[in-house]
Amino acid sequence: MQFSTVVVAALAAVASASPAVKRQAACPEVDQIPKCGYDCIVNAAADLGCQADNYKCMCDQFDALRSGAATCVLSNCGLDGALEVISAAEAVCAACA
Image 1 (cartoon, rainbow, N blue to C red):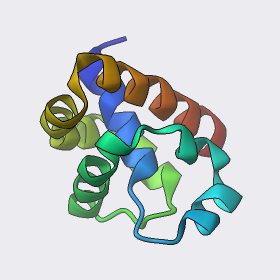
Image 2 (image 1 turned 30 degrees about the vertical axis):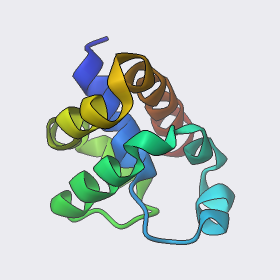
Image 3 (image 1 turned 180 degrees about the vertical axis):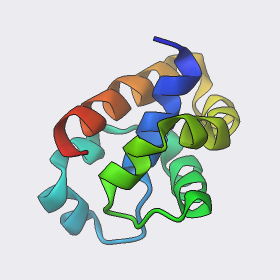
């Protein structure tokens, strides 16, 4: 899977301005996304018009989310961290979208 594609999925899943408790209740997989990519995802998802807990919206626009968040995630998380973001994003989209 392409690195940037996975990063976007992770970013989409994390994008949330709602309390962590709400995120956990709706999709506990979100809490597995590394914190270094959180703000990147929040910003990219907001740019797409997705609500914080609307994982379907974010995952349905995965390519756009990836494009919007990939540079930020790589910058904040480094390659190893970005790979963790990718894995977590895949889990979120598989379980919660």
